[in-house]
Image 1 (cartoon, rainbow, N blue to C red):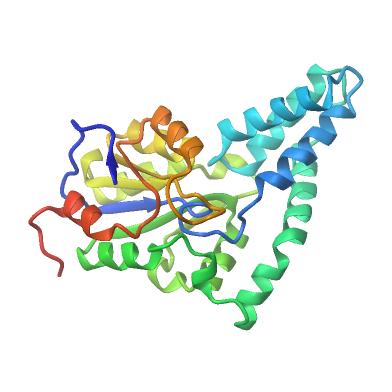
Image 2: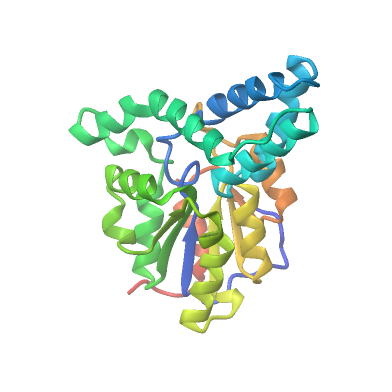
Amino acid sequence: MEIINKSSKPGKLHSVVFDFDGTLSLIRKGWQEIMTPYFTEVLLDAPKAGTYEEEWICAREFIDILTGKQTIYQCMKLDEEVVIRGGISRDPLEYKNEYHRRLLEKIEYRRKGLGDGSIKPVEYLVPGSVGVIEMLIGYDVDIYLASGTDEEYVKQEVALLGLDKYFRSRIYGARDDYKLFSKAMVIKRIIKENKLHGSSLAGFGDGYVEIENIKEVGGLAIGVAANEETMAGIDEWKRTRLIKAGADVIIPDFTGLDDLEKYLFGEQHAI
């Protein structure tokens, strides 16, 4: 555990918000390897497109910046870039649906294996995920899950990983009408319904957006910089990006549970 913001101290935690993909779940590991080439392909079809390398860099940059928001935002930005290059504007949902078709084709064996039991959930969970959830529940902390992936699929994948019994109805995902959901909306709703101060809230995430959203309300932002390929140590690119977003703490995963528990709860005792 690396404490970045030493002046930020956790208050008495009431609620914790988790991102899903890359923070708890690895079912969609490698999604960037689907989205970036697809978006590059779309940009190259525009009349005023640059080279493959130029368009790949452009796609990767805005994909990275928007990671954590609903997928539709990346598709909306793609459409803007197509128009800038002299292309015809399309409904961003068309891009989203095609991207999702390609992604599901890549990960279907993971979902199928988890469903029929031939793949164990631990293979697609960030290490220590169940432990940190059970630790928080032990301190009577309410846990929520907010994902930029479509809610239908989030709920399916939460169940495939055996996490549904922990989150129950506190699972939020993207909608086709993107104005009906955002992580910021979920966070504000939690604060309003529970009459909380920001210091009573913490968030775990591997994306720029959720870290910013937690900091905007005065909460404690914990960046999860897991190396998704080796599942050992820190992904330095993620670490740099999460610090830039304002993360108070960086962890590689949830295996250093004792240190994290001491940091969050000090002398408190679990119920």
